[in-house]
Image (cartoon, rainbow, N blue to C red; front, top):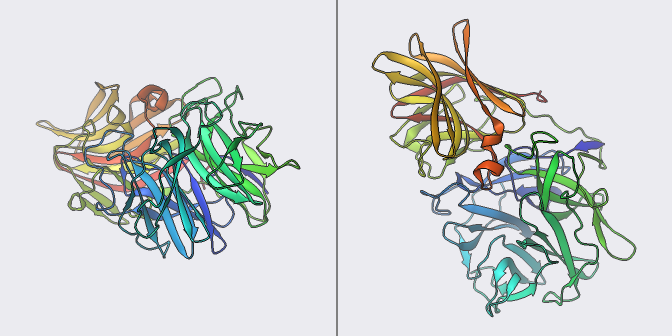
Length: 493
């Protein structure tokens, strides 16, 4: 069948994949959002279903009052001797740690720290030994991809940390993974930075400690020179064999809002690219080293479309997430309505407002909810970070209730429009395309346009950072009740 990229749409960067019991399992970065590290499974590498999160307890990860794009970076998932391991970095504490579980649908352990710095950690298992790999600086002051052997039961180092490869010459060497294929050790990594110069490179050794020799055909995968083209930023990949023995790279990438519009508001997404070794043992990927929109894959199945999201068909413990620290007393969530109890913390604060969100999954979207407020403010936010977000809300004033549209760009706070409504309930609507978010309020049969905000201001190119736009519900200074929530995409069912 022919599949289309991305295979997982929306803000799901830094994918890592493992196989176990005939299925594929994948994790992605979550940064300042809680629970941390979304977890997926698949039968075919194309259709991914979220089964939960790895970091579900505050004892596992500290996210309180961290800036946007801090928190949990670049996880790796591995399966060894009946146990799943997830290793990652909390960039807030600058510590690398791993957790484990024997039940992929159950709870994960408390963190076990490893005394090796850098980011983007990975694990490699062989003959009862465990190797810990990250980027950074080794015990001797040498930079590059750094490796040590650890006791997997305790995280204690059993060797010095040693730099084993300095990359192929690109900046920001990161995302190292080691595989043993046909008797050789393949060290795959990313270089160039997770923007338009991103690329995947590799080196080969006969021994786990090296010498790792840089492949002559690097980079093996990059879209940096593929223009004009929507798909850019391809890098940070993980190798996986499918059930038929075919090799693929799951990587991050992003889609520009237009061919000539170098902005991406959906964040970095998950792309699947075929790979292979040639007769000389060189690793190649994609269409002459680039990731295209579609490829053929073995299997008799269809690629699923995005669903229509409602309170009834989503699970707040699986599909939704919170900003930084989760305060359960502020949320009453059911299949009929979400009740949010706001505090004095706002979306502009580097803190934990009353906020629950889904990722924006595609460009063309319509989102609506009936909103009721008793005091304060409650509504819908298109949220990139504390400095860039667009909010449509109901707000209580001395004169009654009003619908208001607020645009926050680079810390500049602008109240775009407001209008009085009868009563304390109205339907708030967001209609999005590649270039604009358009905001409406409906009272009875009367629908009023309040204004718009350009998508390009909710992008990494403008705001910086590593996240993507979230479709959030929020409350400040009072209680907001949300019902009849619907989020539908143009290619959805």
